[in-house]
Image (cartoon, rainbow, N blue to C red; front, side, top):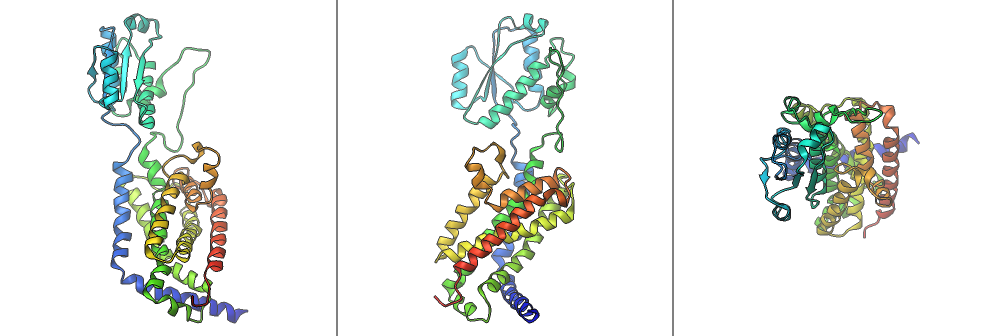
Length: 389
C-alpha cells in the first residue's frame, strides 16, 4: 500500500514537472497571468460602478418659487447630477427621456411652497426605465432629498458634497408613531468597489483556470504528444492531477496579486481569516481546473475548447452572484448557479473579505467545493481512457 502511494505521488510530480517546464516557456500565458489582474483591478476598483455619476435630468417647475429653486439646488448638491435642464411642459420632458438626454424628470407642483410649510411636499418623478438599476438609484436619491427637504434651507449645508443622498436618507425623520433609522453593516458607505473587489479573485481564477486547463489535453491531442503522455506508466488520474498542480501554484500567485492590489490600491483588505482564505481557495481552484480539463477531454479541437470554455465562463459570472446578487434570481435559475464553483467561492470570499469571517464560518462553501471537485474528478476519470484512441 505504501509502495503504491509513493508511486502515485512520484508519477503525479513527474507529470507536474513536465507541465511546469512547458508552462515556463509559454510567454503569452505568463503575460496574461501578470497583466490580467492589473487590468481587472483597475476596471472593478476604479472604472466600474453601479453608483450613478453625471446624471442628466430635467425639471418641470410649476411653482417657480424660492422653495422649488432650493429643492433643485439640494438635489444638485448631492454631487450625482449634472446641472438640470428646465422644460416648459410634459411633452418636452418626455422627449428628453425618449432620446436618453435625461434619466429623470422632476415635476414640482404649483402649491409646492404651501405643501413644504405643512411638512408633506409631493413631487412627481418620471424615470427612464431602460436602465432599471441606475433609475432606481437616481429615484432613491431624489426621494431621500425630498423627504428631508427643509424649506428654510438650513439642511443644505449638511448635505453638500458627494454621498449627500445617503446622509439625507439616514438622517431624515418621518412623521408617525415611531422613527426608523437604518444602519449598513460591513460596507457602511455602500461603496461599489468593495462589492466588486471582494469577489475579484474568484473572477480572475475562474478565467485563468478554465482557459488554461481547457486547452491542455486538446492541444496535446492536436500536436500529437497526447499519445506519448498516454504511453507513460501513469494512470489517467495521475495525469490529470499532475497537470493541475502547476496551475494550482499559479492560482495562488494570482490570489496574492488580487488581494494585495485591492488592499494597496483601494483599501479593501480581508477582514477575516487569511488561513481560511487560503484553505477555501484550494478546492475552488481544483474544481475550476477540473472543469477545464473535462472540457478538454470532451472536445476534439482547440476551437471547440475555446467555444465551450467561453460558454462556461460567461454563465459562471452571471449566475454565481459575483456581479448580481444570486438571491434575487428566480427559482430554477438560482439553483443552476449552485453547481458552479464560482457561486460557492464568492459566498466564502465575501464572508472572509467583507464580513470578517473565520474558517469555521465558511464550512458550507468549503464542503460544496470539495464535493464539486470530487464529482468532476470522477467524470474526468470516466471520460479519459488510458488506451490510445
